[in-house]
Image (cartoon, rainbow, N blue to C red; front, side, top):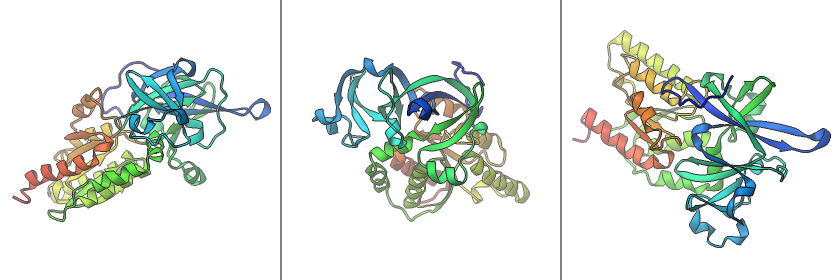
Length: 334
């Protein structure tokens, strides 16, 4: 497995993961933990000592106004600093993972952007970039699933040297720093009981999966939710087979698919590509709903045929637009 700086094509079911690490303990108790983060979420990597105008959380009286999307009073927020004309929070990644604080020498800061929020995470260091297939990402099982749910979305086995790369669910970290945000987002969805539609949704993050399901249901949909791209594709293949056998149109079974992009087994781009290439499914309306929907990455969803793309704070807009689109297609409410 080798690192790469080549931009990935759409629909290949591949991802580039930045390997970062957190060190714990010393001497005989020393342990290095390897974690993975989608390169597309990383804006810059800098040394902690190079932070500009860093101020501790307690010393920054206007923190709530500077970073409204994050509760800066949360103890996981170590402070704030300037980056490209904005003040952003520095988050203690080891604290969020319930680990010992990392040593203070030569620490690194990952500046990230997803869900339309720029923030930063303190880590021990970074290693390299790995290009993998989402099929290589193993979902958590058994006790590990119960222990790490909400922090890790899956693991990848690496070699030379042998180690396990744990892929982080930083979307959950951001929710933990602002637990009221999702509730407020659902309340923004306009309720509807007219023209009930059938929808399938997929997201590996439990919190985001629930957000999509509850929001769509509030907007007048009956929803089946799946934990990853592979599982929703299995369900869609069954629908494709029914369409082929009965001669019925796919809309007799389902009218909308809402998918995350980053998922074990199959990502949202690969899923969309398969749907649009299947003659029995290609008329399905497919929305991508992801923290990776940015101006720089919209072309990837367009390349695989996604009907619309929304970043994850835009759930109310997604539900409203989906009803408008489907009402036009199926002449409902006319």
